[in-house]
Length: 494
Ligand SMILES: *[C@@H]1O[C@H](CO)[C@@H](O)[C@H](O)[C@H]1NC(C)=O
Ligand SMILES: *[C@@H]1O[C@H](CO)[C@@H](O)[C@H](O)[C@H]1NC(C)=O
Image 1: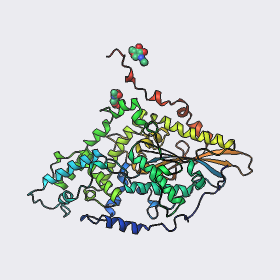
Image 2: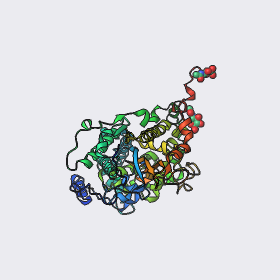
Image 3: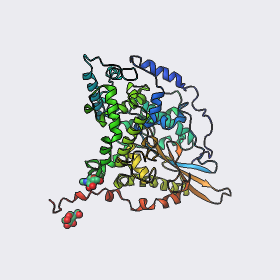
Image 4: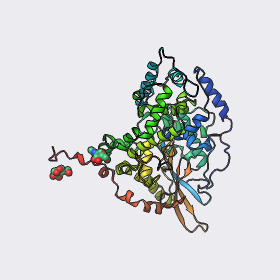
């Protein structure tokens, strides 16, 4: 039996006593570690104004500004159930923490940097309209990204995970109890950034139980290291139909390509070409996007304001955010049915975990897996949220309705920033007279209660939730959904 307290932890935590490092001290340490950089500027209002438009490269704390003062203090959503209900199981899907740019992004950035370098020698251009020669400043700005970094988790990303672990452990003390530690189940995508995120999360939990003690190697922890399962966490790589119809299909992202050459982007291209004093023909939407991402990477990874941020204003940022969202929409969201249908197995497994916990609880057995932590990607979370009906706009996002979509629901920076997390909490509840037991479920997205897509209720009876999603639970079979019509090689077309 679980001897779990029924009340959830409330108020300021006593758990983070002596090892709390004030944010200011952290900032000083970070800045002094970077003092080699002559152009270093502290994060300022330009970058904080842009930072909510970074799409999938948004920092978790920019999607959750409440965390900024104290990232280790648990955020207790007032809608969370308590008193009459005991949490019995938690299944979390967690996107990896802050990461380096990918090799592809670094290549484009180098291309842009080279463009600025070749522009300079012998030219004495007038300063930019606002008095600064931004092109020169950018050519001097050290390109500190190297190929080996290729999408790996950065130290800030490990911190994202440790802090998330600390907050969740304080929020659900009964589930993350010391005695449950050995029963934690961790599953991860094979990508380094996800494996490392799982390990960092475990280190955060270690810190929770043993403040001040250095954590052991993950392999030596009671629950063992995260287990790799790409069929589950990278289902999109294993779905033939998705690969042929979307991933490898040159026309599937038509709206993304059309937007890149549309009037909104063209305006930015002209403006940036003038600011940097390079021919507009040498620039394209991809290079502009990578310049914008560099502003986001320098902020997220180093906590500094890159001069690249000065190239863009809020209106540009909104357009570039839309470009990012368009891609996510057509590749991971509602753009094509297969995007979300390819996540059916992941969805079903979550319910299988909860089914099992319900069964064990009904038999008064201990729940064998009270906490299941699954580490994946934005590309893991978005299809699943789409499958469940979340963030669906009335009209599709297209290359031609940027203005109409200004207030869209599908904003990836709000949904899947770094370290974003979708959590299912299964509760065992007794009514006041103790006559009836029932199981309820709440979902949390980025630690805020996510109302049910169909009813807007903040909690659901487990049976009702299963009933609502019964079509997916019963009739969506990934093997069938993902079967590509092209697999039939014997067709007479050949
Ligand atoms: C590629 O995408 C387009 C647009 O959705 C679609 O019409 C076409 O059938 C797709 N091609 C393949 C090979 O699936
Ligand atoms: C493949 O296509 C041929 C001809 O259209 C058809 O007779 C056969 O049943 C198909 N096989 C499968 C496995 O679908």
